[in-house]
Structures are given as structure tokens and as C-alpha cells.
Length: 91
Image (cartoon, rainbow, N blue to C red; front, side, top):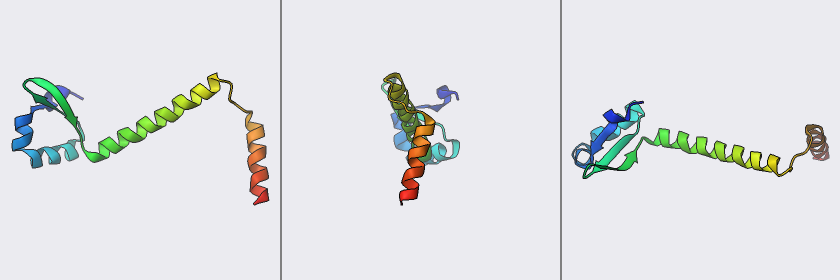
């Protein structure tokens, strides 16, 4: 993805807001908004943002799992499976 084609000044966003929103939804690429020549914000369509949030949540779960492994908070699969079977039978 080339961000250089997706850099626009804030004045462009103000003048073309509806078109920018259509472009974001169609192309599913973020747009960098500049103010006084400096990058100030990144905007993206909602679907892409939701996918990013889901990805970040999964990465956080993996990181927490790795921390638990490093801390020795693990159990053999056979023990966990046996406990789950016992709980299922009790229901």
C-alpha cells in the first residue's frame, strides 16, 4: 500500500468530505490528513477499523497467553480435557 497517494490536506477533506468517505469505503485504504504540511490524523472506513480492532484483540490474547506460559501457568491438555468432560457430564 502506497500512503503517498493517500495524503491529503485538511482543506481537501473539508471540501470533499462525502467523496472522501466514499473513497475510503471503496478502496479500504487509510488516508493521512495533514495540517500545515504535517501529518495530523489518519482516517479509515469503519469496516477496516473494526478488522484492525479485532486483530489487536487477538494479538493481546496471544501476548497474555505467552506471559502465562512464561510464568509457568500451564496445565497438560489431558488434565484440562478430563476436567471439561467431567463438567459436561455433571450438567
